[in-house]
Image 1: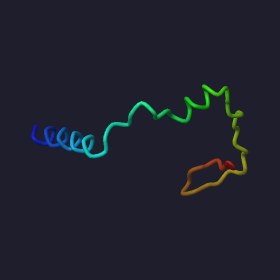
Image 2: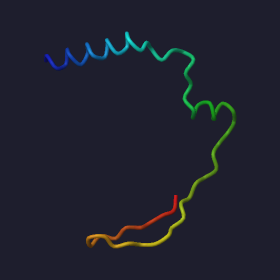
Image 3: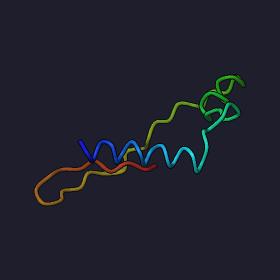
Image 4: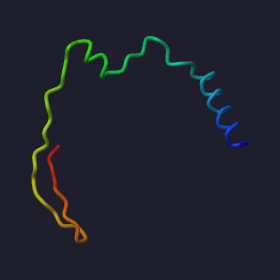
Length: 62
């Protein structure tokens, strides 16, 4: 129970020091959506298969 109270106190102290986020912050995804921008579909390019410690891994280019 004491840990819970300490965690709540820590959260309150952090809010008081840094302040709330405010109403001006808008996540990047929402800004892009509002602007009508949609990123092009991304499909990674398959390069090869590798065996490491007896397990097969598929390697893709980012």
